[in-house]
Length: 114
View 1: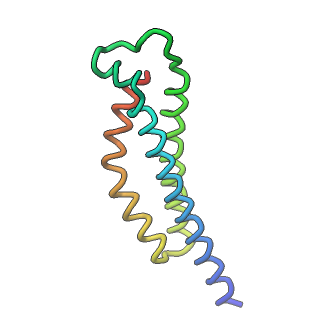
View 2: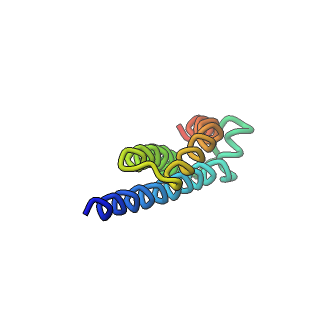
View 3: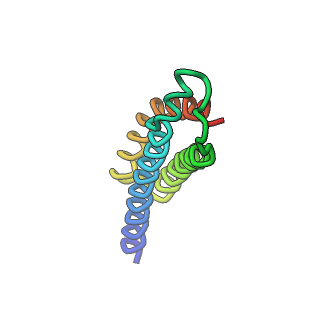
């Protein structure tokens, strides 16, 4: 019985870790959506958005990106709290490494959007 419970906790940690990796990928994708848009590139160069640009899409992407990043860290914490596995440890290390460039990208994205 105890080994069955330990195995299920390990599986839970692995599922949470993979979900965290997917959330990190979505956070990066949302940030790149803002930074790759030609309208926001124009704002970066000229200081103003071109006429007729809907800012709601960029704001949703910025908030969604931050939400996905927060969700990823919560999933990593839950995975490590349930059981430390190789997958959970690897995703935690990759999350720390991915957080540094993401923070810079997100600051620029928020400055462009708001």
